Length: 195
Image 1 (cartoon, rainbow, N blue to C red):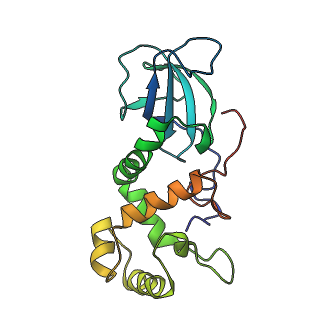
Image 2: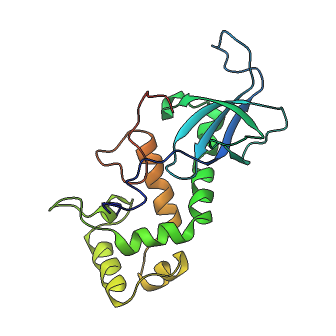
């Protein structure tokens, strides 16, 4: 799926924008210092991050700028998080946030279906999506050989019995974020590195 050598999924890029998963006005209960903390998911590589909020008017589900320039809602990126580091509120909103990121970047993710390739001789990257076995894989590859997919709706229409492609991608992202995979094609592997 993302085995493009020079494709955007293999480049090491910092997140520019993120979705707020949770806001803790006084920080974590285990924190020594009380500061307003937000937990975020990046739009580019689904990087889980923790940051210090600038003001209390930040909302869960809000899209915020976290790039190198002047930030209006976030003052400092504290670091990268693993799934287990997320608050329960952040975990509860994670699937919806991932789903909205994928829907909002339809062209990018439809292109993944158009360019997906085998990971090795036994498994194709599309087979990593929940519910995609050899029959669905064959149907997807046949349909894209006729012509490239143009939208999620086009994928669903041309591949019989395929579930919602956005949902399949979102579920795969969650599996990868939880660290439950051998292959990481949509996210960076979990790590304790600082962002």
